[in-house]
Image (cartoon, rainbow, N blue to C red):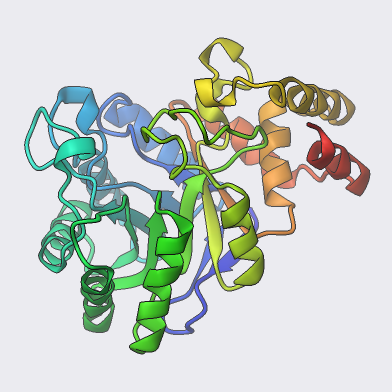
Length: 327
């Protein structure tokens, strides 16, 4: 395994594995025995960066989520896991009532919600401190200053380490970080967005957001990372839920003329390296100029093994140029 640093403050920054493991469906669609096996193998391979959310996976049973955090808590206790494993979670998108959704009934990002939801996550995970806590989705009903101060208060109390943000317009990320900086408060340092080798259209509805834009790492976000070298991008759905090997599940926002040339470039490099297309995608992210940590999901140890092998796949400069240039 290889590692990189997230965060800039010596008091809160962490060394994490370059490949993060998503636990979204653990404890719901993925049963406990399989989930534990995947987690055990990930840690055995040197992985130490696990991602979840307080609303995972509410859509499976029509509830409010919490199954993933609860499973991770059981796994931690059964394995004697301490703070050597960095667990990131998110708040803001938990449905307020069973049978509803974050789209129209999310908990939001008020100071009260931030405090209460973070406490519930700590209880489910069985930790005294949340290593990394994200603002999951935007909340336009709450002033940004209240959200910034709400997160910062938990850092000051020592119950949260690093702060992150996901699925926000980049101008709102920058505004929140500016508010924090002006007040001498900790701000967002880890950004979690969907990012892969294929490029999504932003003018059609996406899988998660009606406007098709907020979840994707577009040119504005990548430019922001170049301008702010202290930030890290955690890339969710890097393998597009299996679409690289099953074109029939390709999300509609990737169905455009730029997709076939990029797929062909991936296949060429896969043939040259003897790797799988999925491994080439991950290696392309891992070895790029920007700090990108792919966040992979796995519903079996076999899937995880394929992903882990990508860490040691080295692409040549010429191969990387071809992957970048395909359009």
